[in-house]
Image (cartoon, rainbow over all chains, first blue to last red; front, side):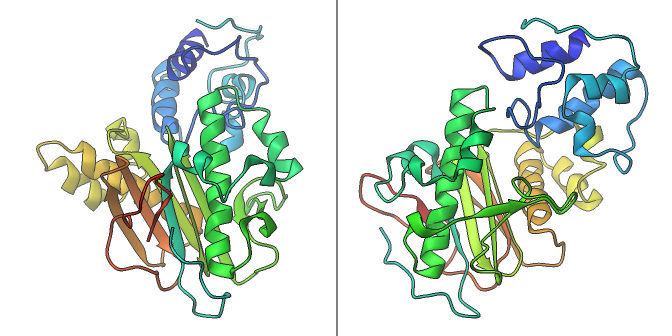
Length: 83
Length: 220
């Protein structure tokens, strides 16, 4: 997940605090529609698995917790600091 | 500024506006206090101030578009949103509850805002001219193969891929693939825009209407 957080921080320089694991990444405008392209590619690289775009919804990318559960396994999460 | 339009009639033209965020926020016809409480609640969650400004600008520009189509003052326009997926209000596709025959859409990106209102389904998307969608393997799964191949045949595929992307986004926002689609480049604002649907369009040709300072939103 560190790679995901690092990528989000790179997309959003100067954030005023950490990204919460249950923070709504879309409502917070931390990622936009075009960012999803890179996000999918990053998740596929980390997981080693292809994501079937017909089988996912926007809610699968809404929080770090959901992203980890859906794409990167179910290891326990802690709030991750800003990079 | 262009003249206000006549009251909305069936078959009236769509209005699409593209502006920088700064232009919209400086526009004397518009004010953030026009936003509804539910819109303000959504703004509160936006972490990056510049992006909050972009969202505010897009929501205000939508009101200006609706005003120009309906003849009502921007302050009296009350857009709503409903999600086509879950059916809940407060997010998803914009619409005008008082004008069910009109479609509405807005877009915002990196200091730019765009909005459109017109008969039937409407979608609009705007991106900075310099932005590049990618990576290509993911893009190929989302864009028409022929368009990606054509873009990749060019010495620099980036601009063509960007145009293809904004067209896709405009169609997605309209909720229809079978509506009229047009794209243009706003060189003054360094923006690429695509507009989907909306019936007949007011204005002739691509590009913004010239206007005196302070620069109001461009019209089409």
